[in-house]
Each structure stands twice: as C-alpha cells, then as structure tokens.
Length: 552
Image 1 (cartoon, rainbow, N blue to C red):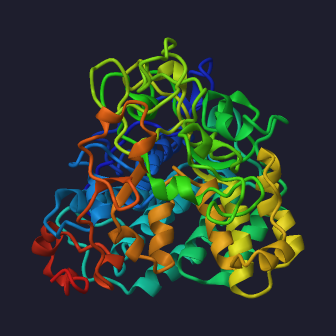
Image 2: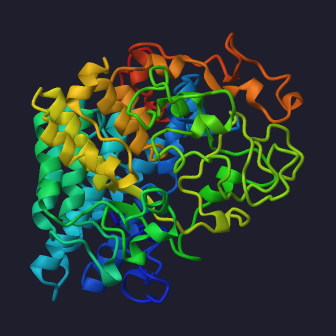
Image 3: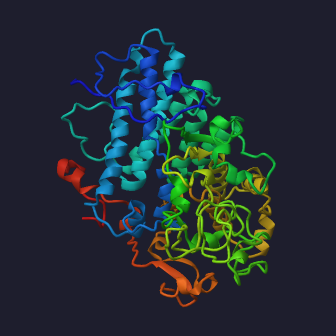
C-alpha cells in the first residue's frame, strides 16, 4: 500500500484554560507516514484528536437555516441556498459537503487500520480509542446518507490513486451505521470522559447517535431501544440549577460549557477554548453594525405554545396587538431562544428611537445606520448568544452541542408514539421533564384529546421547540415528508408592529400584513428529498451514477 498521509486540524476536545497538556497538546502530523507512526499511546492520542475536527462546530447551528426556523440576511449563504431548493449538482457547496465528510472518513479509516500496531498500550485504551473513531466515522456517514442517499461505503484506507467505486444502497449504509455504533458502544467506557480527555466520546455518544439514525430511518423499535439504553446508563441528566427562567438559555452560554462542570446533559459537543477553537455565532446573531446573519422566522415564532398549552390560534392568552405581547404568556423557551423586549443584548441601538439604553432591546430595527443590529424578519436570537462577545469578532467559546439528553428523550417519545405504545408515563419521563425544567405546563394526553390537538403534531412541535437552532429542523422536515414547508415564502412579523413605520413601508407583505422576507423557494417531490451527487464527483468517478432522481 502506498504511503498514506495523516491530516490534523483544530482539536475538538479541550478542557479548562488551565489545562495545557494531554488533550490540548498538538504536534503537526501533516506529513507523517503510517510506516513510521502508530507506535505509542501519545501518537494514537494525537491522531485521534485530529479526527474530532470532523465533528461540526458552529455549522451545527447554521444548518438550522436550511429549514424554516431561521434565515440568513445574506442571499449567498450556503444553507439559505440549500433550503431554497434553487441549486444544482454544480453548486460548489454540495461538493464541499461530500468532500469534507469523505475526508474525515478517510482519516478514520487510516486510524482504524493502524491503531493496533501501538505497543505498550493496553487493549482497553485501544478499544476506547477505536470506539471513538468508529463513532466519528458513523457520524459522518449519517450526514452523507441524509443528504445523498446511496453512497460508496468505504471502510478501509484507499491508495492515493484509487476512486471510491460505485454507490451502495441507502439501506446498506444505514445498516452499517447502526451496526458500527452498536459495536463502538461496546468498546467504550460508560462514564463521560473527564480531565485531559474531557469532551471525547463514550458509550452514551454511540448509543445516542444510533437512536438518531434509527429515528431518521423510521426504525422505531431500534430508536426506542437505543434511546432507552442511553437513559438507563444513568450518566446524563438535564442541565438545571433550579432557575426555570434561565437554565435553558444558560446551557448554550459559557455557563453550560462542559468545562464549567455543571452540564451533565451534553452527550457530544464541539468544545471551544480561547485561541484553540472559537466561533462567531454571538456576533453574527446580533452584529451591532450590520444585519443579523440569523433571523428567526414567523413560522418558528408561531410554533411556540401559549402557557396554557394551547396553540396561538386556540388560546385566549395570545395577543398580537403589540410586538411585546407576542412574547407574553408563551412557552418560556420562547424568550430563552428568541430575543424579547426588555432583554439584554449586544446589538446596540435598536429600532426604538426612544430607547436610550443600547444594552437593552426594546424593538426590532429594519434600516441599517451602522449603529445597531438590523433584522430582516423582525426577530433576533438570544439562544447561543454570549452577550459579552457580540462586540468581538470570532471570539466565542460556547460549546456547540451536537447531541444532548433532551434529544434522546424526544427520540424515545416519538419512537413510542409511532409504534402506538406511548403512555402518559412515557411523556412524564421525557417531554414533561423538558417542560418542568422551564416551568411550562405539562403535556397531558387527556387534555390533548379534549382540546382537539393531534398527538403526533404536538410530539413533533416539542422537538422543534426544544431543539431550535441546533441543526435538526431540515432533517426532521425531510424524514417527516413535509417538504412543502420548504417551498413556502419565508415571513416575518406584522409590519404594523414596527416602532418606526417608515422603516418597513417598502417591505413586501402578505394579505395579512406579515413581512415577506423571501419568495421563490421550491420543493419538488421526490427530487428535493435528496441532494444531487456533486457534478465534480460524477465527472471524476462515473461509477457513482446514475444521478439522484430529478437532478439528471
């Protein structure tokens, strides 16, 4: 076999700022061959650390803009284009998704083909590391199969001049992912990793990803069991300090970092640390002198229940006579996700000329004057915003939560519901734990029936609300076969609620006065339920054909 190079990137897992050894040590491995490497535990650790760079960081948050929760103010944003359906096989971003995931898979394959060669390393440690590498590889295949369907299944290092070969069927890929994750779970420790390996994967990570993959593929019994296996580990618990009005929000700030010690909820994360790995989500959400890159949509705002558990069209508590009243008497997660009047923010001068305190938000701003953050929908995010870093460029250190216990609970509830076995006890064990954390009215099966609320709709709503801005919405829309939602116009608030009417006078609106932010989106069934295989990849390897349906 020809020499295979190892490529290392920014490390994922880091500990507190005081930790400068172990997991944070980085030695360039750009040109180390597998003939001379793989002999010590330190070398295995450095190679494994490099694999974690393949776990998505702030892209996890940005992916929510592929769905109907959020929209970027930039018309050239990759995820906005993906969500619009207006692209083709020649779009470079489609090729980038393919290449980036297969690059990581190649790195994992090299690790798994060589790790056993290390001497003086216990088999337990080798197994743990191999389990982590298998989990990372399965995670990347999960991303690929969700986008492209049929894929080349590559599990061994390729020579530098070898092509991937033809595509395996989607079912075969998913079978492999589920089997791989089950095997990985058996190789890894039950307990979360701590100290110099804080943030690296453990048994629960593999099982949680297995639950997600099974849910995506409607394998309800598999999803139920994998989710319950995670719950039964008794390793994870919901983040809660007894402050319902704050805990959910805090989880996505510095207080919720794994290194802060209080977060036992996160199962997989990209951990960020000063000058090692940082991102720019806080600033891009409330950028003080430009338009926000992340704008919540009317569709997301309307999805939050009122505090009585009813939808906004049924609850007597809902009022839309003022901008502030939209946020009142709603699920508390709304104010902890979407910026409400009276909240602190970093966007400086808002859209209310009478507001003399730039640290407090009172009204949306629609016209750029370089003095405050502009929104294109009338809404801003507060979830994932660390206010102190909004004024700084790419200095965010929030952990990005790729998988947390809340998702596992929602997976368990949905899987049980789809099998017709969901009980009130199951809801209390899952959804009501999430509602109790924020002080929201509990979900009761008898009340749903009495109020004419559909159980499946409410289970899905709960997932949307709890996981808003965590990159899951597009995947859910696709697996629920609700593609028509992606063809709808993107809308914002009512123009009549603007503090300065002249700021919105030239904005398009629908018949009810809601701002039309984007029109011309499309979703063709079945075409858009998959991405096209990138044109570049088809040209390099004709064996990948035929093209996915509708993209020919």
